[in-house]
Length: 255
Image (cartoon, rainbow, N blue to C red; front, side):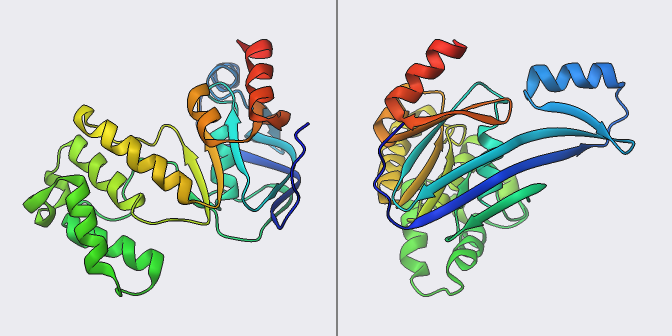
């Protein structure tokens, strides 16, 4: 196990589980097979209702300043865990205590209507984070310059290509620094010509965050940004230690 310097406790999970109800009419045998093959979660039926246990009996402590890589195959529970600790999902049982807000960068979706112009979307996000427009002009100019959208910033988002939307969203969400960050590698900017620029900005963005939870399939990125590694399998933690040992464990056990 990793010998961590204990400072201020940021996050504590005690026997935490997450059950997600299934509302489809798919036959149980088919549904169970799909869940096991795609999500890796545990299917069960209780009191006449069907559930998938996406997170099972998690016990974990995280201290301020830790940089944690989340490792596992698709459906192992990494992104669900990020959603849970950032408050998108509520736990079904156990106890979860977060001393600070954990900011999620998980989904490639805008938090505003696509009927709005991009500049209004930028303003809405700035207000959401800061509760004031003080400093907005400089922030907005940074987004315009980095995204390369130019005068298109005044057009409705619904007129944008997928690549333009990705550039806008990436630019907005990486425009701030955050004390605690939950990041999924699947969050990325679209255009090939934009990717190198985006990677450099993302590296700086991660470096400026205090505490990091980073779900990735890239051993190179995990080793670059993380010190501690947690391996997930079927919604449970099966290893917790240094990032190098966690990667070795995963390769030996699951690849």
